Image (cartoon, rainbow, N blue to C red):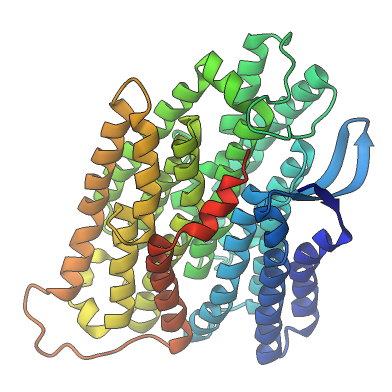
Amino acid sequence: MHDVHSLFLLVPLLAPALTAVLVLGLGRWPNVREGIQVLGAVATFLASLSLAPHVIAGGTWSLPLFELLPGASITLRVDGMSLLFALTSSFLWILACFYCVGYMRGLNEHAQTRFYVCYSATIFSAVFVAFSGTLLTLYLGYELVSIFTYPLVMHHQDLDAYDGSRKYITYLMTTSKLLLLPALVLTYVLTGNLDFATNVTSGIFPATASRALVTAIYLMSLFGYAKAAIMPLHSWLPSAMVAPTPVSALLHAVAVVKVGVFSICRVMLYAFGVDFLSRSGLGLVTAYLASFTILLGSVIALTKNNLKARLAYSTISQLSYIILGVALLTPSGITGGLIHIPNHAFSKITLFFAAGAIMVAHRKTEISDMDGIGIQMPFTMAAFALASLSMIGVPPVAGFASKWYLAIGAMQLPSLGILIVLLLSSILNAGYFAPIVYRAFFPKNGAAGIKFAEASPYMVVPLFLTSLLSVAFGLYPNFFLKLIEVVK
């Protein structure tokens, strides 16, 4: 199959952009505003899905937009890796639209129109990142995500929100300006262009380039995409928990952090290439950095009593599975890393949706206050339990597929160190999720007097669906695997 140039690539981008504009203009009518959100989300997903048959058959889509300098263009390109991220983001946006109605109305949140405008604009930016065909396009999309999510983090407009959003934007903008932008300039000087390679093997840097300089560019890129929350550039993420729960779900499951890990994986595979990362030893260095983040993030999660804070550190840990898999530089490792993008997204959005449902229905945020919450909210906590099993890596839920491929990739290395990290991290995952589920369904003082009190169906139905989909993708991962198979 060949590369197809088509203006249709603009449709998955125009749908969320137009949604944001229409919501801004019609925001005074809540039902209209929220209906537009749903229609925009469905249109974005269907437009992205229509690109899949050609990609699965081995082809690609592309659309050059304009050139800033010779070899430095804004170009859209869609391959298997692009669709893996775009389809995940756009589909979860559909369910998030309904969830947001229950949450925002349930708490009578202010500035709902601004919220929905920025939410739509963030999805536009995430799809733009997914469709990036050059390093310059990727950088632009990455920055747009930061800009559009800042008002979401600041949404409550109280002291905590201002402090958290200031830390959020300072971390992300500082790292991108001090690390990513210089890395972009140095890459252009060395190579004369910013296009991605056409395969994961060769990369774009000439063999004559200074290895020390290319290594420096790699490290600047690795830490410059700070949305991936690799330690020590992670503390912005727990601070962003001041945002409403639908924003936390967007940050931790769908758009922001996934933009970070997707960008790093794209640069590792299509800018530096497997050959260079293997010869230089940078793949193994990255794997150990990711392993450190996986373990320490899990240990810190064990200490958190606030549910959203525990989930935040779980996210920091789980994101590094994606980077770890790609850094293994083996087919199985790369498959495990990339398939964890959707697997983690569906499971983690379930967990945050559940936390929000508990907050709306019972105004509880601390794990120690959630004795018997599973009896009061059986559908919510059953979904939470399923998503927890996915995070731990228990079959048949989706996270098992991720860890299965990661373990196979780790066993192909001469050392068992990475495999031990994976096993230990799963034990830690169980350590911070199992007590929540146990407390929810087996309260210390028994179940007497605890009454059924679920949140709005607008909230419960989406989170229950995402948990069931986590099971479905664990049992039938073939669609995602087909997209990953054409990453070559």
